[in-house]
Image (cartoon, rainbow, N blue to C red; front, side, top):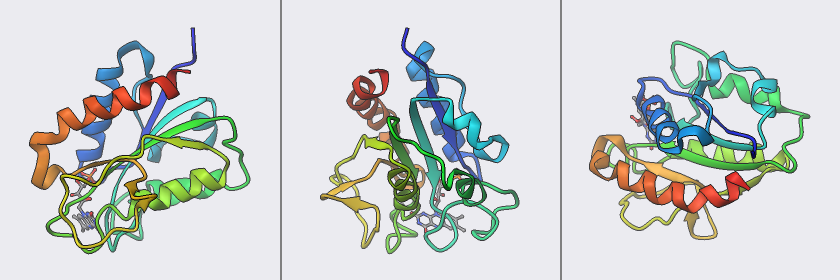
Length: 178
Ligand SMILES: Cc1cc2nc3c(=O)[nH]c(=O)nc-3n(C[C@H](O)[C@H](O)[C@H](O)COP(=O)(O)O)c2cc1C
């Protein structure tokens, strides 16, 4: 059997954790239980060949962590541990939470920060997501006219979360499961 999918997330107020759990539930036996990066080491992540990584955007378009005002460490502190490590041969899908109404000028900007790190480390990123259905002023997280991962807006579009997750998982499953 193919290796399981590893799911890692950062979260301040729990929304991203809940989405990660929902993803794990939908994937069933194909995925291991989601892990909060505040409790993870680089080796925990590197043991997977297929990964789903999730982050909210906090602070001023930032990854969660102490600089963004979180009370605990998160992606900001975790990512430097990946410096010098290779993600070559690994397939990674990203999802990001943001608020297009309150933060439409820096909507889901943390997604591109995660994307840049994993691409730099050699990973293949799958699961780009269309911008249709979202309304915002500006984001850094678009490459080739698409978001670099699934975008979830819990504050304004929570009614769409489930169907977005289902469609995205169908899209990425073949690449993640090999
Ligand atoms: C202080 C603060 C700053 C935020 N900054 C942004 C932002 O720059 N861009 C964005 O899209 N959303 C921003 N948000 C919205 C969060 O990303 C959103 O509430 C998300 O669901 C939080 O996820 P979490 O519960 O996993 O921490 C911000 C929220 C807070 C409380």
